[in-house]
Length: 113
Length: 114
Image (cartoon, rainbow over all chains, first blue to last red; front, side, top):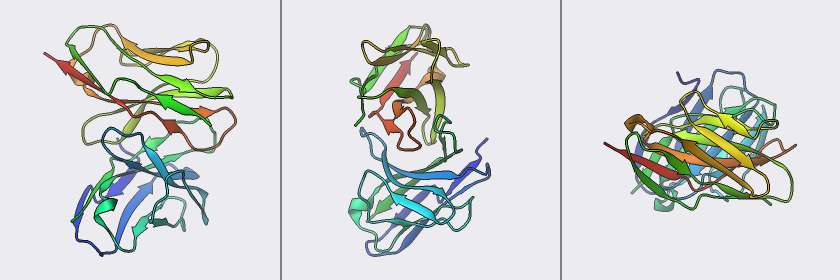
């Protein structure tokens, strides 16, 4: 049973549109992450947050932005979508302990035409 | 810096046969090691992890992995696979003491055939 929810599951949108990918978790986790996943490639961390009002960029440069106004909510926004943004976006959360596992949502598959 | 190598992008195997998915890592510091599984159209789920202690760790569904420090490996094995094991398997590491940045390999697709 999922405790971390991502919406929408699939999104097809035209170039230039603004989009927001939603991610919410009910576990009270302090840490949240956004990963980008492409076929045959490792998952790339694009954003992370250690708590409310804390956001950092990950290892992979991304034109997206994130916000963390509430503990349970970590949305990702693209101001102007481009075909190069086509990918699967995975949201995850974990507790403070560095050894605790990541809990992943089911992902949003974004296609920009 | 750390890196994870999964040399096999795809491993086809017949049902009830044994399987080994290979994972090697590179790190100048000690690491914790993880295997995650991703079933079709789903997110990743933790399969098993090595933090310390016994180098052989097991999951509830029959998978096991052995940490080999000298060979910097953490290969995943199962003695008899099922059709339902078909999924993408990701090896990952995080440096001991680090609080973020789990580093993933490129994944191995385990394709179990009847």
